[in-house]
Length: 128
Image (cartoon, rainbow, N blue to C red; front, side):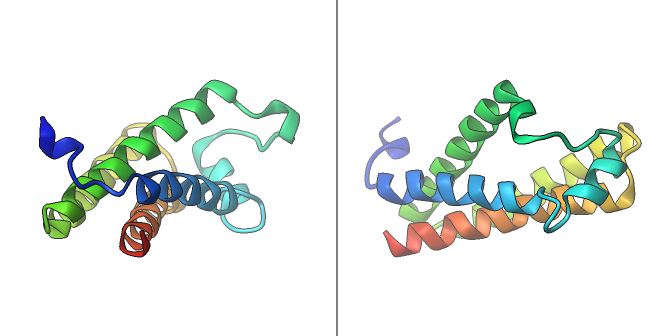
């Protein structure tokens, strides 16, 4: 159990979480991929007042856990493990999008976000 906490850069974990969340905000905004992604998953883009608060809270929690995983693998000099995990989770997410009949564009946007967010988390672990 100690390997989950010992030597982890918590500043890197928290800053990586925040940076990945902000990346998601931009990634899924109309400025980048949001509009076409929303069409591909069958949802409509709402206003800031209509933000799904529960979904956002779980997104932050999930990003924190992934950022923590990045921190643990960095301490263990096992960053290739996180690359394997990102590829595995991206493929599983892509498969989930196929089951939900999301468009190929939407599946690609989701997979791309996971890869980009973990790259951001790895960078923040390297900085801190």
